[in-house]
Amino acid sequence: MWPQIILHADMDAFFAAVEQRDRPELKGRPVLIGSTSRRGVVTTASYEARPFGVGSAMSMMKARELCPHAVVVRPRMARYSEISHQVMDIFRDFSPRVEPLSVDEAFLDMTGAEGLFGSPREMGAALKRAVLEQTGLVVSVGAATTKYVAKVASDLEKPDGLVVVPPEEVEAFLHPLPVRRLWGVGPKGEERLHKLGLMTIGDVARLEPSLAASMGSLGAHLFALANGRDPRAVVTNRASKSVGSERTLGEDISGEAAVRPHLLRAADDVAQRLRKHGYRAAGIRVKLKTAQFELHTRQRRLVEPTDVAKSLYEAALTLLPEFDLSRRFRLVGLAAFDLVEEESRQFELFKAGVQSDEHRRRLDTALDAVHDRFGGLSLRRASELDPER
Ligand SMILES: [Mg+2]
Image (cartoon, rainbow, N blue to C red; front, side, top):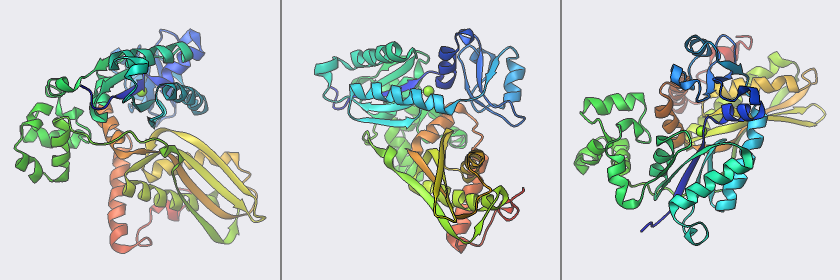
């Protein structure tokens, strides 16, 4: 018996798939989504590019070396966001309890819907069919009694996967998998677990509970996951939450150079609060109020949800050309919205391997520690003092 039915639905190579659908000449060809600038990274690689060893978070330069005939396409976030809304609406035709994790993936709580849709496998198949018919795109689905197992399952047979894990098969499913598949285990955590001789999820599950507890709260958390226990419920409507920081200025300012340091300060503040509450943001909004009290706002989606100040700041800078910065402003603000839970970031981390945000995060975490000890004014980034840097 299934005490709960949770589906995790995750679009396959979402950005690349949208481009291939919108531009049929790209069908069947390796496509890399990302910026071609010197420091650009691959946001999504189509499945045709992946056999060449190309993956997301890889530098674009490296990716083009590995796969020289790939077509590089600049991301069109507004378009992906539009399709994302269509996809989420299809999910909501299946369940009122949908929890988006990012633009292209969500949990669906399907408990009690057997009468309408049949078995969990039939639910997953119907969902895949509906998404394909209505959008022309392919989604992979995992079905299980917990969010964690459903998420692992959706990833296992990508692309076009449908993996169902009934409650009595959870252990047999999880235990042979590498520890990297545990939610919250990144490259560092993997190394630590390997040093302890723990290679598979089964190794972790068979630990003495007291030994697991001696590894701290993370140990207890991994032990619970390894044994298929994950009490988290599907949470809807979190998209309405946002975290903002704004400041009315001592005197009015004008011009990009004057606005930048205030955005950086706000980004630091917002990122710190996101981390404190365990969220990452998938959207960002810049707010400027003129000396005449007119409010101007611009917003965009982020390529990857983040809780890193520098990433929020850089995204905010890309919005500045949309304002008339020759005006005089009395208030500068920045808000992060479309918040997603921290765990999904860590999950991405062990899926993608290296993540470009990681060293920035470490800097931010160090800043948090200093901030907590000495208060907000003690430490400033050099770039905040010199807006041109
Ligand atoms: Mg995806």
